[in-house]
Image 1 (tube, one colour):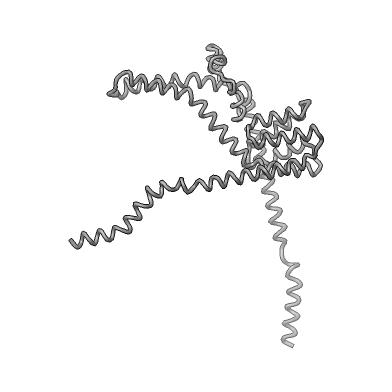
Image 2 (cartoon, rainbow, N blue to C red; image 1 turned 30 degrees about the horizontal axis):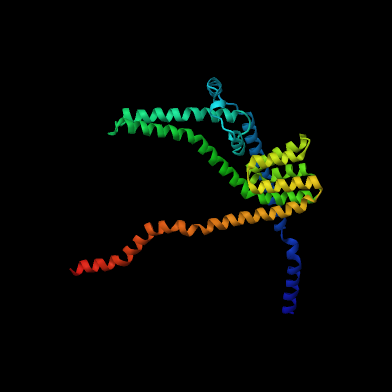
Length: 308
């Protein structure tokens, strides 16, 4: 009777326990979905705020006045300056004005500062010709400084886009296979990819807008490739242009290009990992080996000194 009652009780408990437990999985999925929606809302607000600032920003009045007075656009502007500014994320005429202003002012400021520093502040014990040469070199650095800043900005932006581009192609492929148009797919991916790369989200938004008002999508694809300047993006835009021209399936092209870009990202990571041992050689020699020698040879040296 005791074992029968225990068995009956355990049976009732076994049947009733699933009914009494809460749906932990459902609650966790609901919390994750809510958090994801909040993250998307924050990223969209951040992208919108950044786009509004970049589009409405105007150069200072004194910058524009100096650029117009000395006609710096004719003397200091280069052929690829506007293209590089676009690749760095600076669009419109205002960034060009600011770039020309700093390219004109920076060498003069460094030249004057170096002369004051060497002739007035420190009084270097060197001939005047050497001091003048240092000042001229400082002016040359001032000429190259805006270009170096722009180059670093382009490199960082391209790195951000390169890391997020394969995932963006996967999302674009999913949207197109789901029956969405190319414009809607670009717009949807721009909303989703902002968590990984704001720069890529901005480029997709611009591409979607251009496809809406340009007569030919080919021009929008070419503008996307020119604004980013990456070989992987150029290959994808070329495949999209061919698909538009000859009517080939876009999904298959995107699937192949996504795999290629993912392989390129993995190869870059492997290249960086392979470059670590040579880079760690010098720090190991400088910092680890002396400490190792002290630990190994130190007690013997102390014993010899005590024996004497």
